[in-house]
Image (cartoon, rainbow, N blue to C red):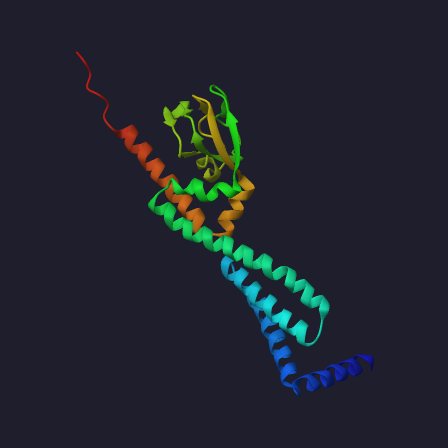
Length: 229
């Protein structure tokens, strides 16, 4: 009996709310907010998910103000700017992916907020062959050598990212500073999070890796200088 009385009481409150324009607005806002929460459960990509969260926050704020429900207003007023900030961050990330496709050097510029800078002396080892990959690197200044593959890298180039995609995630070459270097690096957890949140970012990195591997293959297949008799 208590359950039926509670249901009857809620139905009566619902009818009272529908009797006024403010009540109708309140219920409509709550219904939209709830619907957006349900829809977000089926969304896989981050930007649409954040926009749905923004919409549900706005709907529940309107409901909380008109019902009124101070706790709901406070909760969603806190969540709304957080979701808006994350939407802006992901939108900027998506726009910058296009710039990376045109100029790979732009990758370091917009990844910088997620990276940590560190200076290394000439002769120091960044990582060793066979080590587990935990970071990828950008060279801000200086020169780095990958001795096992006979390659030298300079400012503006990325290295150490291929092992992230290897089956065993092991380094295929060592990395050693030929000069004093300023390196910026991003850890695997942050890198993985960016890939999940924005698949376009992961695609851009894969394209860069494919381009580098293609260049390495062409370099290895190029005929050497003619022998001197």
